[in-house]
Image 1: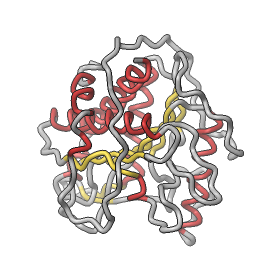
Image 2 (image 1 turned 60 degrees about the vertical axis):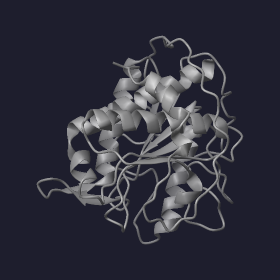
Image 3 (image 1 turned 180 degrees about the vertical axis):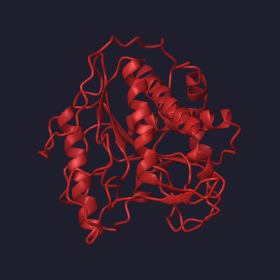
Image 4 (image 1 turned 120 degrees about the vertical axis):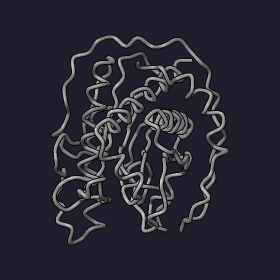
Length: 296
C-alpha cells in the first residue's frame, strides 16, 4: 500500500514541531520556520517513465534549478550516506554480534527506495549504486575529503535537475542511550518551506512504519540542519546548505536519520531486512505525499 500512511502524515505534520528531544545534546536548540499549511489533495497518478540510473555525471558548476511547481513526472535524487573504504559512517552491532556499518545499510535502503519509486512512476537519480565515492577519499584528510565528496554529490544531483533530494543515513552518538528518529532540513533556503514539508512527511511516515514493526519509537522531531554542520563558520550542513566556497544544492532536500546504530535497541532493528524495506516504503510514501501537497 503506497499511500496508506499519507493521511497520518498530513495530520502528524500539524504537530511534529511540538515534539522535542529531552536527551543529551551538545548542540543548542535551533529555530524552526512557521509550519506550512498542508491541504489534502487527490492522489497523484504519475505517468510511467523510462528509468536511467545516473551515476557518472562529472562534477560541474551548479545548474539552473528546476522550478518547484511543474507537472510530472518528477525526479527524486537518492543519496545513500557515506561509501567506499574510508567513509564508513556510524557503526553498531546486530542481535548476533555482527558488526553493522552505516554505508552498507544506507545503500541497501537507497536501492530499495529506488525500485519503489520507479514502480510508482518517478524518475530517480542514485548518487551511488555501490560501495564507492565519487572522489578520492583516503581518510587522511577527513574534513577536506568529506567536503570535496559532498560537493561532487551535490553537483551530480544539480546536473540531473532533480526535484527533491533525499539523503539516507543511520545515526551514531557517543551517548549510547540516544535512540529514535529525526529528519533534518534547511529553513534558510528560498525553498525552506518546501524542505520543511518534505521533512515533516518523512518524519511522520518513518515513525508510522517503525511503529508498525512494533519497535519502540522515539520521536526526535524535524530539525534544523545547522545541528549537523559542525563548522561555526558555516551555518548549515554542506549537503543542504549554502556554505562558503561551496556550490549549493538547488532543490528542496532532507537528511533522514531513522534510527541509531550506536543504540543497543535500534541497531538490531536496523539489521533486519524488513526494517529497511519498511523504511524505503516510508520514504516513498512521504515523497508521494509531498508532491500531493505541492500540487494542492
